[in-house]
Image 1 (cartoon, rainbow, N blue to C red):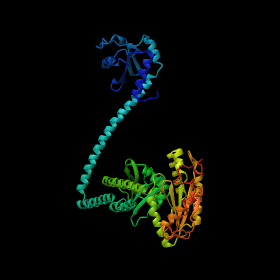
Image 2 (cartoon, one colour; image 1 turned 90 degrees about the horizontal axis):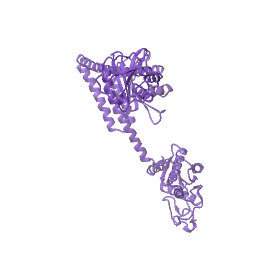
Image 3 (cartoon, one colour; image 1 turned 90 degrees about the vertical axis):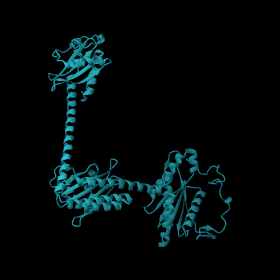
Image 4 (cartoon, rainbow, N blue to C red; image 1 turned 30 degrees about the horizontal axis):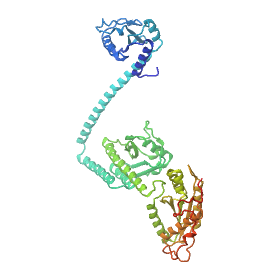
Length: 554
C-alpha cells in the first residue's frame, strides 16, 4: 500500500501469492476498463514462460466465470498444452469498487484448497493497491502523451515564430535592420576580442556593460557577481545621463536578496513593470526603487555554475524583449562566462606564483621583491623599516621523532600565526625550510620587538599533535638603526636570530648597534668574528649533529 509504482505492486502481489501457496508460476493480467482488454501483464516464478503462453490465450478470449471468487482454467479449451506440474491453473479475479481490476493466474499451486487460497488472498487489499498502481501508470502514460503533444506544439510554435520573424523582416525597413544588425555584430565582435585579448576582467566588464547598454538603448545595464564568499557582491553599472545610478542599492539587504535570487536561475527571464506584475517572485519594493518599467536578466553560466547575471533595465517604457535580443545577449553572456573563468584561473595562478603552498604566506621570491621595494620607499621618505626573522626550534628532532607530517604541521602553524598577526601593510613570508620573515614598514625597533615577542608567545602556546608545544627563535633588526642597505639589514636580523638560538631558543633578540670594525654601509665585518671555540657545541653545531639539544621537546 506504500507504493504507487505498478511494477513494484505487481512484484509484491506475486511474492505474497508465492508465500501463500508456493505455485510454479504466477501471471497477473491488468484489466483496462476503457479499452475492455487486458493491458499490463506480469509473470513470476520458475516456470513463468510456460504460463505466459496460457496468459496470452486467456487474454484473447471472453473469459467466463469472472463472477466467481476463484475457478480453474481449462488449458485444453484455450488450445494450450501445459505440463502436468502446472496443473491446476487457478484464476483469481481481483475487483475494486465492484469493478474488475485484474486476473491472477496461479499455476501448479501446492495442495492447498482453492477456498483456503481465496481466504488467505482476501486478507490483502490487492484491489486497492493494483488499482492505484494502474491509475498512476495511466497518468504517467497520459503525461508522456501530453508531453509529446506539447513538444509538437512547441515545434510548430517555433516554426510559426520563425515564419513571423521572416514576415516582420520583409515588412520592416531593410536599412534600419541592417544598421541594427551591424551594431550588434560589432558588439559581439568587440566583446569576443576583449575576452580573448585581456585577463583584466575588471576593465572588460566595465566596458561590456557600457557597450551593451548603448547598443540596445536601455536605461541601465548592470552586471552582478558574487565572488569569493557568498556575502561579497561586485556590481558593474552603466546608465544613461538622464537616469539615476542604482549601484549602491544592490549593497543593501534588499539588493543582496535580489541578487541571490537572480543567481539561482540558469535561464534568461524578463521582468514586467512592478506596479502591474502580480506573478514576480522578486521583491517588488526593491524593483520600485529601481524605477524600472521592464527588465531582462541573463545568467552567466559556466559548467552549470552561475558566475553572475546581466541585468538590463528600461525605465522609460515597457519593452518586449525579442528572441533576437535574448539570443544575442545569451551569446555575450557565454563569452563573458569564459572571460570570468579565465580571469579567475589567471588570478589563482598569480596567487600561487607568489604564495608558499604549505603555509599560505608569501614565498621567498615574492618577499625579496617586496623587501627591495619597501626598503627603497623607506630610504626615499626617511621612514623606518623593521625586519623580524623567525626560525622554528628543533625541526629536525620533531621530524626524526614524530615524522615529517608533524614538522609540516608546526611550519603551517607558524604561517597561520603570521597571517593572523600581520597588518595589511606587512609582508609575512616563508623564506626557506623552517625559516620565516616578517617585514614591518614604518615600524620602530621597540614596536617591532614587542610584535616579535607577542608572536613568540602565540607560537609557544599552540599545541601540535605529537611534539605538543613548540617554540621559535626570533631576531629583529631595523633600518636605519642597524643597517644602511637591505643586504645589511637582512644580515643583522639573521645575526640576532643566531644570537637567540645561541641564547637558549624560544626568545627574541634585537640586533645590536654595529660594533667597531663593522662596516654598516656594506654589511660586513672588517675584523674577524669571535673564535668558534666560544660557541657551545651542544647548540645547533653542524660539526656535532649527534649531540642532544639542551631544550627537550615535550
